[in-house]
Image (cartoon, rainbow, N blue to C red; front, side, top):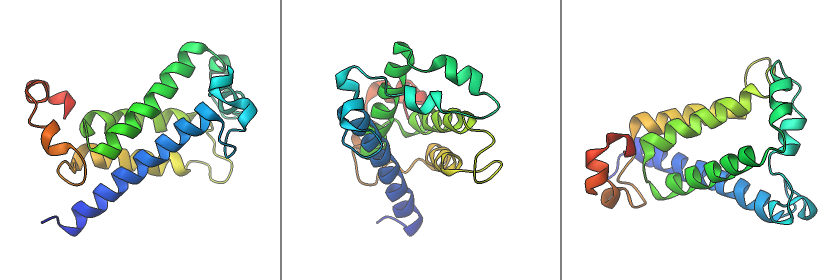
Length: 161
């Protein structure tokens, strides 16, 4: 029987994974929400260009230089896809929790100072949830956690927890 706290962490993990998967599919197909159909990755557009070119923070020159680079596009898209899948299905939560936190930190860094608050935005909240998931490791709730953590390679390499 799961405790209330475990259920909350499991729900946060799945919701955060679904947010990333939605972002992936919206950018891939241009579903018309954050990404219009004519800006989809499948039509040859950069999924990172619009975000990176519009940064206005302290590090905007760095992020402007990364806008539209194919390797950056692939790393970002694969990152949000794999982190999203792992969060939804409960796989490699320690690793993906920390990687998700790094992704959120970089996205937050792109807009420092944040428009509505000098330091805080949704990326900070998501990053803290990712760190919490990496530390708390809600393994056995909804998903494939039990099977994953019994695999020999996972037992051998604790990084895959």
